[in-house]
Amino acid sequence: MGEDQPFVVLVAGYSNYTKKYPAYEERFGKENYAHTTNAKRYTVDEHLDEIKSIIPKERPYMLVGYSMGVSLIIELLNREKLENCKGITLIGGSRYQPSHWFLTFTFSLPVPFIYFFASIILLTYPFVLLFSGFNFEKARLTCYEGSMKSLVVNKAREMKKEYNQCIRKVGRNITGILKENNNIPTLFIRLKEDLMVDEEDVEFTKTFFKKAKEIILPDDIIHLTHALDSEFIEIFMSQTDFFGF
Image (cartoon, rainbow, N blue to C red; front, top):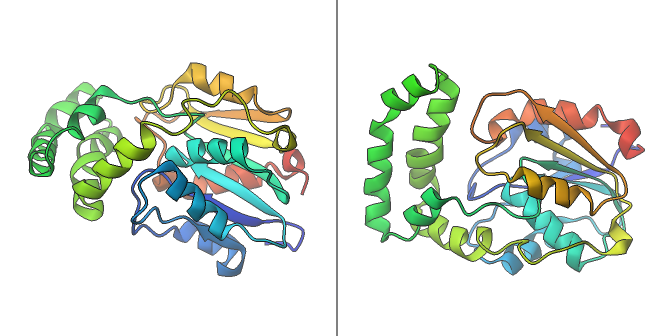
């Protein structure tokens, strides 16, 4: 990474409490990159405090947000003047995340029932595979990555608290950001259709910025995740002229 390129602050997506991001570490190096963990943080304010704690004080930086992380960045831009932020990349998200009925129902259940419900979803894999036109990646994300694996790795109790205290609240009352922040070059990366993204809200969120650009990916999956980190890095690092570094 060149000396003229800023430090990268990755604001991770929902849960991801123990996840590592090797593509970022390999591309930027440990000394030029930091990420949020979301561990033991449930409310919007707790998440924002973690973001602020890893933003470098004396050097330029770039914010990269995924999914829920996008909404948290918008919330931060609404509250705080970001002095040395040279660019923002928002991946698979906007001002808020829709409260999908399936997740709202799931996380209204007692924790043991959440695991039981996820087990049933796992058993639907053959049917999801069939109805997705044998899209193995889409079926895997729906039935395994998005349900049972997440619950086992991140724990249903933690995910339930974060969903109800953060995702269902973050960004929903925001109608703009601080004027000191609206000149920051901001790149939106999204799918044409995404289960967890409201397209109309993406368009509204773009109006917050004087310099906004959008890249729509053709991937046929339900939601952009960290599984595509390497691809996303190549995309936003190809936009150095847009960001001005």
